[in-house]
Image (cartoon, rainbow, N blue to C red):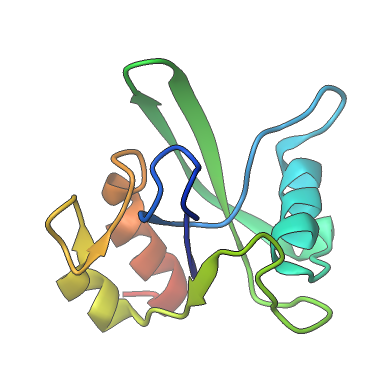
Length: 125
């Protein structure tokens, strides 16, 4: 699943893996469950998440350390709660279309190196 960042936010228009910031007292898994509920209106149980990898990327104004998890089960219907656009992207399309600013599915710089790892997690390839 890719989520397009809405107008008015940093990196607006780019497609990213859903998630967000970890708040004080949260584990990365709890933060992801909260963010998924807030952004997509579905409940993902922490025990249904599996860690895949992480990204460490320095942007101009901050450094991002982003753990990446997969979840194959959730409760509810996906709904863009913050005005964003959602799209399911299969492994072949992700390989061919996702990437930097000129790609058909432009993604933030921190997400681009994760594409092959996500495909492997999705498909076992």
